[in-house]
Image (cartoon, rainbow, N blue to C red; front, side, top):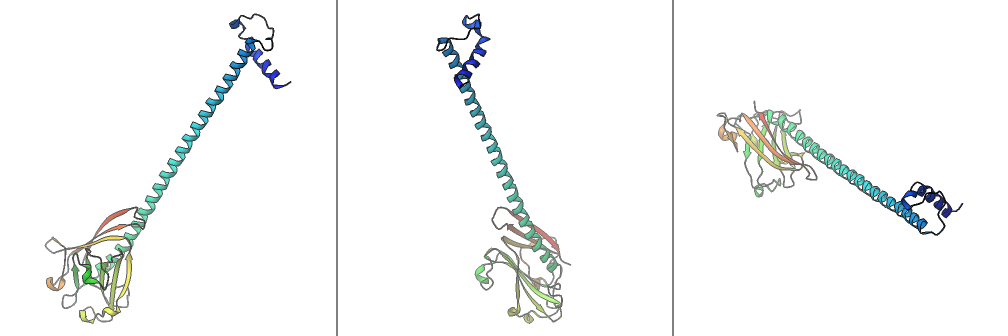
Length: 253
């Protein structure tokens, strides 16, 4: 049986139930090529074509929605992961820097001449070309009894921020006692280390015994150490996705 025969049989079966509409009361098949057969065939073809088009539209619409949702979720997940990675990088950087500074600052001391705890507020980098200090940042030099090299009793430490946003620590150690004169520290023997990266700002403030905060400090003039030190830094990640300002206050014994 060919396709046309199958189609006619299908049409006749369907039309059989709707004979009353066209005035037929018997079950005789339509004459081949009759007007009624053509009408029925056209109706069947139109119905099948329309149904296929609707299916296509629905399928394309559903596919578009699924693709849109998938892309949206992927972008959101990528954004969240990127932000979390940047935040974690910044916090690890800050934690590492503050841990080292806390140890050094807690060991702050003065020699017999009330040296050395000296701060420079908002320095001009032209005055510090030898260390490439960043203009507008602060510099702090202190004598600490807790140097990195535990075999040395005392170290002269300087914190400064470079023009490339790297926090550096210059350290000079001595075999002498804590009362060594500042002239005993040879700058040529200084060792430098990089404490933190992508640090945009560095500021220090100093707590005086009367409870007020000072922007600068010179122990030689004041003849005593501050009661506390406030350190403020703005740190960002390597790709500048996240930035935050951190502030820590350390007590000085």
